[in-house]
Amino acid sequence: MLIFVALQIAPAVSLIFRYYNYRVYRRGETIYLEHGFFRTYKTSFKVSRVNAVRVKSTLAARLLRRSCIEAEVVGLASGTGESLRPVLCLLKDDATQQKLLRELVPEFVYDRNPEKQPAGARGVLLVRATIASLALVLAMTYPLIYVYREASALAGAAGVVLPWVLPLATALAVLAIFYATRVSCRITEFDTGRDLFTFVNGAVDRETVVMNYDKVQMVRVTQGPVARLFGVARARVHLLSSTGETSISSGYFPGSRLGAVGEIVMERIASGEYDYRKNSI
Image (cartoon, rainbow, N blue to C red; front, side, top):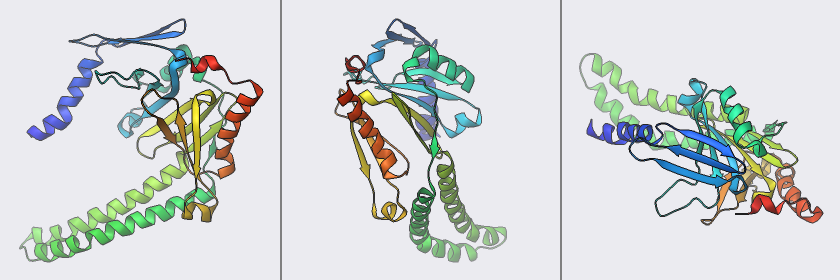
């Protein structure tokens, strides 16, 4: 009980007090945050320091049709451990969230035309799910046999029910793996616009990340042996950061489409379209 309180209840209560009386507003090119019950936290940063904007929704929040908005900001790291991702919007409905996005960071709002993962991605994900399921079954083989033998010797209802608890749990875990694969195939997206591009990931905890081409340091497109067989690849985008680096991964798409991000970045630099003001930190 004490462990449950320490690991679950205490952090939740701490967050409630931390974000009590939450206020966020934009004045000119600066965004201001203020919140806190016992201690007042005040944060401000220039919009030009924002690397990316994340719209995040956990499974529980999604059931309530809620999501939050985080901004990935360069230069907020400090000895006090302040987050590099200040929250621009606490859990709100989609309409409120979109309204706040347009008010606070219109620079990261555009008309999207997303594309879903191709058929090859489904093949890669199914292979991964199959391998994970086989590994789980192999790891559980001995415990399954041991528990079945021991529980079968019990008298009464326990001897009937308990032998099947672990096999049922293992079967449910395998089903969960394949269900997560199906959801990932359905929701993962990639989109390129004129100044911005977007990754959507997460079978359980969903995340939509909108990034600016002018903030990209490096794009790494990788293609493992299984992905190569199905003609797809994954990209890892490295963004500007004051503390080493920060990176964001995509789903499985054709390598030529993912490589277009790096090509657009280079074209913007070559054509003079690259805006140095968006990198002034």
